[in-house]
Image (cartoon, rainbow, N blue to C red):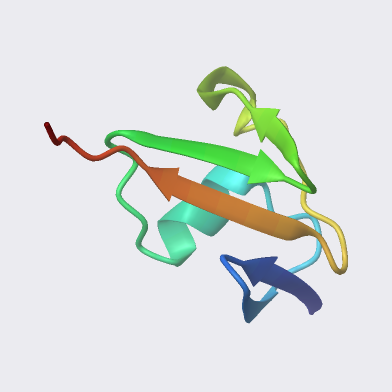
Length: 67
């Protein structure tokens, strides 16, 4: 298992987990989100190819509406 931080909370994931698999496993809604890994924005088209590594820091940002 590898340690990954998601929004400052540590999670244990299987080695070679993709970003898309992590999002599914953690039950994160993909609607209106942006994702960064180690401060680098990852486009949604790259989520299936981006493999997470030990101690990666993932930031999930949800868009909100307001005025």
